[in-house]
Length: 224
Length: 153
Image 1 (cartoon, helix red, strand yellow):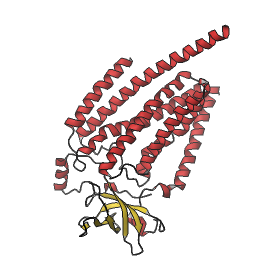
Image 2 (image 1 turned 90 degrees about the vertical axis):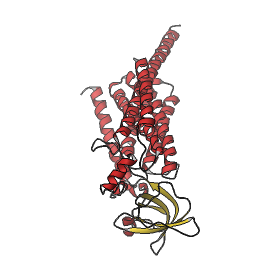
Image 3 (image 1 turned 45 degrees about the vertical axis):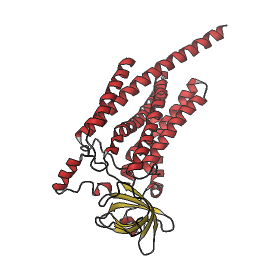
Image 4 (image 1 turned 30 degrees about the vertical axis):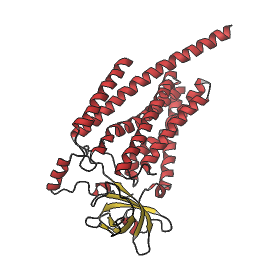
């Protein structure tokens, strides 16, 4: 199944980038610079979604003692961290020409930066504990505590005065952007989903094989 | 109750308690998280007096005046209810325009004027092709006006 998702991701990224650069019109206020949105927003969505999924799998793992659940959570973390980084990076590149600054300690940006640190902390914590079962439980707890940050990121632009503008796309009202722009963004978001599914499944498979091998080694080691 | 149900309830209750705690902390820090103050808040003396802070609002139409030295600019920041005259020496961002959002960092003087050390443009969440913006303007709408401002909690 992994090659299918990977192929789908590649095709969708090509279509999405084509729509983003050649089909979507120039923005009235920002000109061509706004096209960063086609990477920035899908990456930001993915960065938050990955953490929510990580926390959900962690909760499931803690409740059911399910090892596969922990492995899914762990496999999501590097991809989530990657998208968080892409989001911050493209955001910085977008902020310079439009707002006039690379970085400001605004609630949206700061909370997204905290998300990056949470991902890094999660990965570091897993890496620091040798016993995989203890690492699973400790990192799951971190994911559950950290997930509180996700609604803060999402609603930061509503709750406080921020430099970052409000959401262009939300469930409660019609999107405030031209249809072709929205199309490009949605295709890119879908492409990022497919990429995430492919990469996470591949990572879980690798993790299962590694743990299997480690268990077998322990078993034969004990016998000898 | 099975062990796994007990654990699930424990996790749910823990998360709930954590959410409440975080909400309380954020509420307590509210004034530190606010990125800028609106002119109405400044008029109500909610902004700090002894240190630099940011004001945010719209650049009032027909208020931008360039001084003869070429780098000093004065303009009025308004939230349609109150307004503050601002002077600034430096380079303005490309999106800085009359009628558009702006955030300025600096100090408020006793006479109610504001000297900015940094001026940032704030744009809104509307994206449209230039033709659509023109059509909106013809129809009498002001695109990208008050949307950048929101009533503050």
